[in-house]
Length: 210
Length: 210
DNA sequence: CGGCATCCTCTTTGATACTG
DNA sequence: CAGTATCAAAGAGGATGCCG
Image (cartoon, rainbow over all chains, first blue to last red; front, side, top):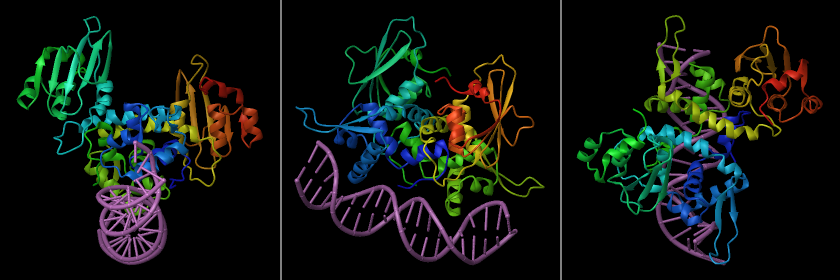
């Protein structure tokens, strides 16, 4: 294991989770919850199987991930974060917060999983009118749909379609991001390819202050 | 440039600052402020010169670092963080906060710069008795001394010795860290090699709640 | 000196194939 | 499904040389 050899909290953190792919594995375990090897792999398009295997072993030795022996019916190993692993949440949120600036560049042929929206949603959206009745927004980007529920001052989200959405946003991930976060006016977003159904005025409920 | 090719805020952040050494260069520019190539290099023991050069170029292209042409007398280039670079502060603080858990292992022959204490100090110490008169603590680890000033509810620190310290802590970095943060009782720390002069009871002023 | 560029060796990675 | 095995390519680390 290659270390920086520095007595510094930042360097020591990077010694443990600074290798390529490592933090993205933690990301998958945070947004997906405990899951199987193949679930992690499909959330990390491009990773080589040997690397995923090696990184998981390293994370286990470091006490960040633990593998849970097969429960009777599933008969497979589950990977889950330990307490120390969960405590990496703030690191990932800080990275995601900083990285949102790159989400509005036109995406070429990048991979996308709607679970990754978790970071922008929890970091950027807020319930700006907590006293108004709850609202459901469905986001549909071609991948799995995501449902955002807004009400009582909190914004939550979950995978899957909404039963009776008040608003549906459909389009490529960057255009949906721009519309959700207010980087682009709804009219401009629609002209750029966003499809909507429902009350687009509801977006002002969740967008961050300009 | 190698990217993850994922439309995800975290992955895109790591595309830019995920390479080896990159975040540590940003760390140096945060704790040292704007400085010269050699100042960065001496804060990064072990880095190869070509890597530092390449990373700085990359950071400049990414708009995280800017180089300032030689002011007349110094006749050398200064590197400084841009706004986007400063905004990496929360990322480094989150990493440092998480990494403090590794600061209490016995250090073998790790490099140490007292400027690196900046992260534990600002993350962990607080003024727990803001109404008491101000207090000055000097930390001396063999490297450059650091002075911590506590008063009016804020904890500040600066390089260099204190004029009239109320307390001086002297010893190897891990033992000083343990004493400062309260991971170890003062008596145990002294038995483990800590030297003190002044009023060790002042430590309760800054240590985090147990 | 400060700020690199080059060359060389060694380690890590990425892509693919294969196995219990 | 959950990995290992193999191997070519890329990157890291170290030494040295160059140039204002």
